[in-house]
Length: 250
Ligand code: NDP
Image (cartoon, rainbow, N blue to C red; front, top):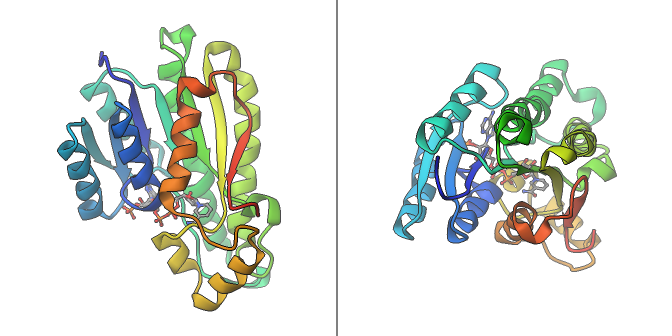
C-alpha cells in the first residue's frame, strides 16, 4: 500500500483536470490521470508531474462504461494498492441548441458521460475508501457547473440537467457515507478558459457571459484546481455535502 495519498482524476488530460492533477502532485499525492482519446495530452501532464519528482500513471478508459471504469480502478489497485481521493471531472458539452433540437441520442450521450460516469466511479471509490471495507476514509469531489442552477436555456438544457443530477447525487451520497469517513463535495465552475469552453461557444458568447460575471472575467483552470485540492485535503475535514462556486460571483 502506498504511503502517499493517491488520487484519481477522470478527464485529467486537459483543462481543469490537468491543472488539478499538477496541483495534487505539488501537494505530494500520487496521481492517476484518466483520459479517453487524447493520449498525447495525458502524457504531457504525466511528464510535467514526473519532472517535478512526483508519481503519476495515465489510464485510458471511457468512464461512461462500467467495464472500463473497473479497469481504471484496478490499474490504481495494482500500482499503489490504496485510494484517498476521486475527482469526477470528465465531462462533455455539445453545441448550443434550442431544446427541441436536442436529440435523444445526444441527451443520453451527455447523461452517460457526465452523470453515469460519476455514479460508476463513485461506486468503485467507495468500495476502496469505506472504513467498513478496511479503507482509510477519503474524499470525492464532483465537478459540476453553475449551469446546474441556471438551467442554460436556449443553449444546453441537456448539459445543465446532467450537472443538476450530479449535484443531487453529491448531496445524497455525502449523507450516506459520512459516517464511513468519506466526504463528498462539489465544485461549480462558471466560465473557465479551457478547450471545452472554446468548443461550446464563440467569441460573441464569451463576451455576453463575461458581462454577466460580477468579477468581469472568466476564470483559469488553475483557480478551479485550488478549490478541488482544498476539498480533498484535511483542511476541509468537517465539510461534506456542499459546493464551492468558482465563478467570479456569478
Ligand atoms: P475539457 O474539454 O478541457 O476536458 C475534458 C476532459 O474530459 C478531457 O480530459 C477528456 O479526455 C475527458 N473526457 C471526456 N469524455 C470522457 C470519457 N467518456 N471518459 C474519460 N474522460 C473523458 O473540459 P474542462 O476542463 O473545461 O471541464 C472539466 C469539467 O469541468 C467538466 O465536467 C465540465 O463540465 C466542467 N465545467 C467546465 C466549465 C468551463 O467553462 N470550462 C464550466 C463549468 C463546468 P480526452 O483529453 O482524452 O478527450
